[in-house]
Length: 154
Image 1 (cartoon, rainbow, N blue to C red):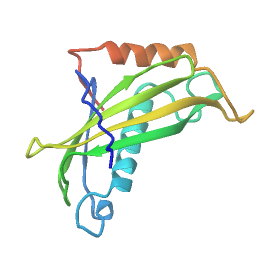
Image 2 (cartoon, rainbow, N blue to C red):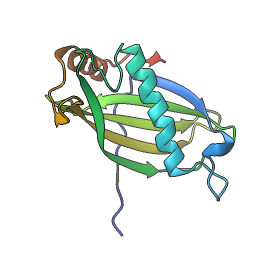
Image 3 (cartoon, one colour):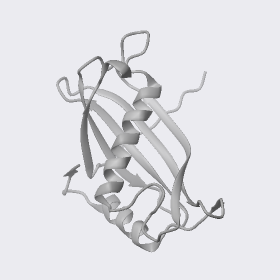
């Protein structure tokens, strides 16, 4: 069976640390893939808050985003109360879309838990149609994507 093979980015300018909670565990008593997507959603909300936008308003009062795809590649396990470092980088920034690449590492063991990428498209919620990214958010994402040495904790 072919597997999704994500490669780590050269750098990740944004970092967030979150703990694995009891409701994040699956029947195998480790972090479930669905809950990992929920945790990375929290990371995205923190990033958007820092950029002074929301998922429903990217700064122009009418354009939001919708998730269009997600790829997750587990590289290790995470368990109850593990602290996970989520490192994030905007990639593939286009006129109407972008991706967020994530590397998830266990803080204590320094072992890689997962690599993830989630694609987003700009969306006009009033017309229910695809849209262009507002210039302001595109510029902010491009600036973050280019930062090498200025890792920012959210």
